Length: 113
Image (cartoon, rainbow, N blue to C red; front, side):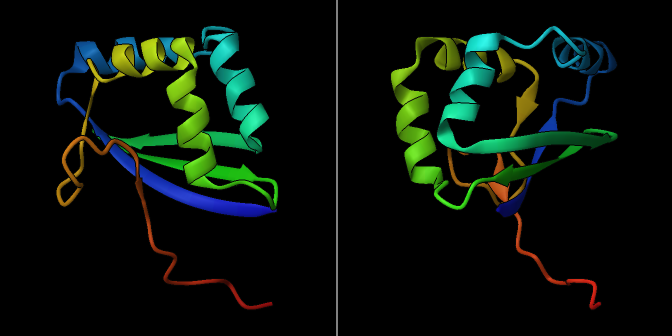
C-alpha cells in the first residue's frame, strides 16, 4: 500500500465552501468518478479542511501511479465533468504549476515505532 498527501485551496467564499462540502456529503459523489478512482488503484480517499485549505489523504495499491490515473481521468467524461464542476469551488495553492489542482506534499516526518 502507498499513501500520499495532497493539498488544494477552496475559493474564500462561505457559500461556495458550503456547496463544495454538500457535493462531498455521503451519497452525493458521482459513482462513475468513484469507480474510476477504484479502477486506478485508490483504496481510500479522505479530504480534510481548515478554512480554505484542504488536505487529501490518498491510500492506493502498490501499482498505483499518478500518470496512470491521469490517463484514466482524461478518458473518462464523467471525471472530466466532475473536475470542471469542482474547479468552480477550488483554486490552486501558492506555488502550484499553471493548471495544477491537487499538489503532492512532501513527507517530512514519520513517527518512529
